[in-house]
Length: 318
Image 1 (cartoon, rainbow, N blue to C red):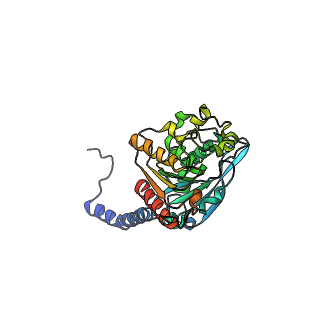
Image 2 (cartoon, rainbow, N blue to C red; image 1 turned 135 degrees about the horizontal axis):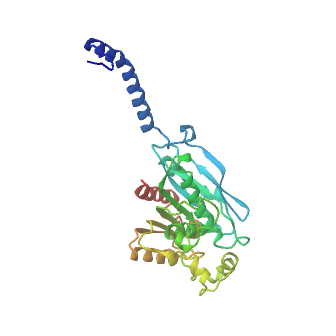
């Protein structure tokens, strides 16, 4: 009989296996430790734990009209796994303000302590840059975050928007529009979605065709018209785009706000609920615009409002 190889004697086979056992055991221990380390990582994948509790400023998220668009990234103070994200959009009548206003009304430390990353963005301002420049930039920021999700350790499926006044309006637009609205712009990251999964709109206008006459000049400066019949104001109004697939909304509005009347949020609430969208309106008593006291202490307090916002994001982004 012709043999192609010499058979291994049983005892030799057993001895070879025994010699391999320490090596196999070591490999198993290394693999187990690596998996355990990944599972227990305190920060998002791709993010060093040393980033927790820090702020990365002046991050360029896009470019439009020759303008470098910037954001500040506030890393959560503690976290496990991928970070949920809240994008902050500042107010200022679409013509002033900047990303540093993120600390003006609410205590962002509450969100950071709950494991949220906060990305506070700048956007092009009127009157130099007319609408839709502002929403185009906000949408670009969302696309940037999704395109770079692995670099920042964020969960691209858990992103919320939050803003006040003009920023509330832009946040609402982020919630109710997709690419079919024609508001994406050309700032970058066109292959990514600009949708959000939850919206906190603090006293933002929802129907630009029904604002006080005192705001006519602002409307002219930002939207090019104050004509309530104009297509431009309808195109810029969140009410125009509401549909049943919109994300949940939390609306906060003062009962004595004469800049953006409470009726703007009440109408938005009614339309959202009619479309089957989860939505809640909290009316802040004794509060004017920017939660400024109109007649005695506001209620709920700013501290209480902060907790409401954090609880809302916990419900829909966790």
